[in-house]
Length: 238
Image 1 (cartoon, rainbow, N blue to C red):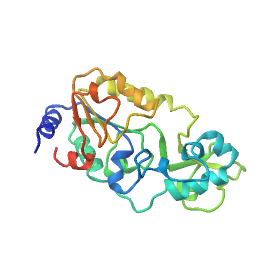
Image 2: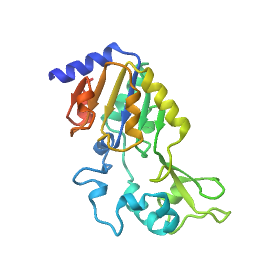
Image 3: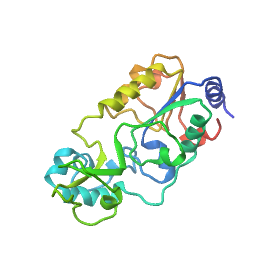
Image 4: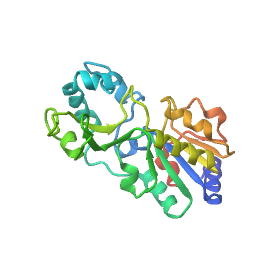
């Protein structure tokens, strides 16, 4: 076990007020591609850039094309929680982890057993009518064909935050509360390039900021411990 892992393990063992903030890299070991790596979603070729397709204005303008992309690229069947998800759930069950704050929309933290999960960007496992707000089964939009319509005539949409849409104020406020009060803040599997989500870590007031990511981030020089390794491999050792 290398020195960084030993330091990380000691931080976790000594704290009962840990908060985890994670991104797409947490789920790549489950087979869900990230967004910004060489093979990521944003580097694949589509008729329109993925950032455009995943925007509110595009959804309103061309929902059929949005759903073609949604079902082919956002919906990945047969995935399961990996070592990172499972370890976080274990730490919560032991009373050490207070909250998981995630930018992911895949629901894998909950599938692993985590209870207090703050989904900054929503979840692909929920859906509602864009007109009347009626709740609909997510399977209808994730695996159906054509435009999913509500009885009111509105288009059913996934409960995710599209580009050009604000984050949920209650979720953001709760995330700020947990981050501000945390003893240990672990940031994992995120490039910290997506705002306003990435800016939430500026609320941390402690001295045990841990960054676990394969590549460097803009916040590496502010962290107390930086580990550039696969997050599942790291978490399996604590």
